Image (cartoon, rainbow, N blue to C red):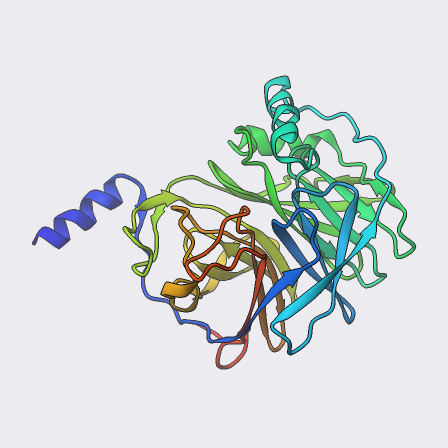
Length: 328
């Protein structure tokens, strides 16, 4: 009776209590050396190359060399970033971003990376709600994004709070559709389509705008209700996969409607005693889904986990039984 009353109270308060979902199996764990600013915040698999970004480094992205070794080496690839285009973010948000960059570094605050079949890499800047495109030759330019997108996103309740703007990016192989994930309060998904030189909304840009809280996994110490969030995106086999940081899960969604089709948890592996961090929230920030499994990257915010490891960490999980396209 008490449990039923507690559940009813949580539902009344707008807290989502997730049911059991299948657990993914951890295959390997890798630490990353060579990232100047640490704070790994995105992953992309471009052909046979894996790339990552740090939210502390504006002038470089990193090429990784995956191997069976526990430690991977990050090779810095310098980029010359042009001036960020003007946008309609309010002065208050922009000034807080500018001030924060002097404390932590990384004024552009790179939070995700993706690539198309031509080898162009797309990096999302959270602080400016903008996307930087880097050609295979290393030339960088900002996408021309219609101001309609920002107006629609903010009008739906997203992108209103400091350090809670775009946290993930995914582009289709043809390089003419781009998805962006708004992090939290409200979290959401936005779809842009390339129309000649401008990326614009095809009617409505906003696929999803979602408020509310959900319970942390039972394995989390002193689990409580926290804000629903997105940490990254990955497009695989025509489906959009969202990394849901506080819920410790990956969800498959319809790329045109954002409707959830199925979710998988990685809490059992990520929250083992030796892998826990002292922060009271999830720290995963990077996702790549492929036919054989998922790569998940951890942004440890310069903190050490229980076993003393302070470097960025990447986990390799096996694909679920039946593959990522399996029916619920």
